[in-house]
Image (tube, rainbow, N blue to C red; front, top):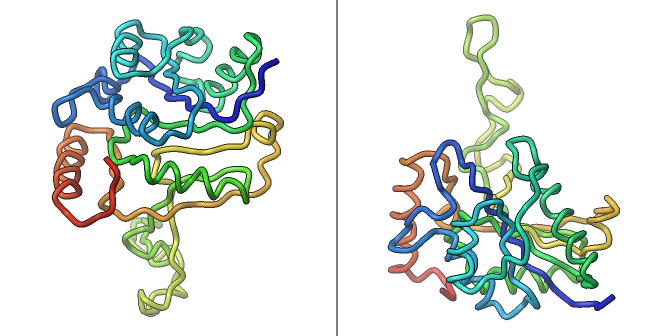
Length: 233
């Protein structure tokens, strides 16, 4: 068994429903998956950068931009109900069957064009002190003052915070949905005890579920390219 340090897994299923062929849809002039592949390669962190897909066209695009596609995804991890965790465990198992094991790995989503090599290196360094780390972004509005419909009325979910100033409420965060770094042994044995996060700005984060989301992401991308935000594109 050959022990290697770091693997990058980029999941890219062919059956995207909300935006057809989303993983290879053109974004700022090239397939969006290319940004994830190039950032992973530019980071210099990984022994292997691979794409897990069930789709030959996606595999061809991935190879064009420098990723490895040593095998296609199984039917079990290609359906609508397979989780990202299922995909990652399948990949790690396949490599182990070929005599390769990795001390740590990253899962980078294929539709995350704001990822930079610099952010990946930052996460890799912080992984030394935890089992898992991923980027987060602060909720733009305090969740403590959220509203719900109750018996036909619109009311505060937590009335105790109705008159609390926003700046006095504890900041809360959500997953940026871009990438995850793991130590392999805790992940495979479901023993992730310590998780940490990297704080991202709202400008660096955008869901991509609709065509409007896509246009917003391209607008943000242009702003980042033309701003003073530190990036290593």
